[in-house]
Length: 197
Figure 1 (spheres, helix red, strand yellow):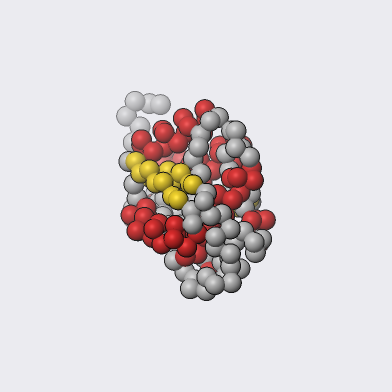
Figure 2: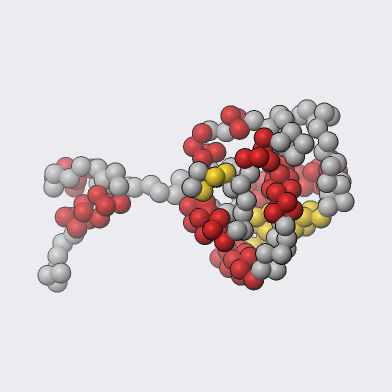
C-alpha cells in the first residue's frame, strides 16, 4: 500500500478515540484536536454495531475537527470490496471492521494492519483514560493476531459453538469433542456408512 505506516497508526488510534468517546467523559486534558482537518474514509459492514456507532460520528467530528466519510455495505459486498481495494495497493480505507479469525492473519501478513501496542500506550495518541482492563480479557485478545494487537474490540460474537446431542454421544461412548480432530473422529463414529467409504 502507498500510505505510510504512520498514517495507518494515526487512523487506528482514531478508532480507539471513537470507542473511548462512548465510555469516557474526561475529554478536557487530552488534545482531541491533534488531527484536526484530517479526513477519514471508514468502510463498514452493515451490522448492529455500525448502526449504533454512526449517530456518534457528528459528535466525534465536532470534538476532533476531523471529517469522517462512512461507507456501509452488506457483508458479502463489504468483504469483497475491502479485499479488492486492499490487494490493489492503492486503497484509501482508513478504518474498517474485520473478524480476526477470518481475516486477521492474512491482513497482518499482507501488511494491511499494524501493531497497536505502542499507540495504545502513547498518551499523545490515545487518551490515558482508555483502559485495556475495561475490556474482558478474551475480548481484547480476540482483536490480536499471533499475539499482536491489530484491532480493538467493538463487539463480541460467538462464532465457534458446538451444539450436540448428549444422548447420542453417551450412547456411543464418545466424550464431548474439545478439538477439531476429536469432532471429526466423533462425526466419523456417528456417521451411518451407506456407501462403504
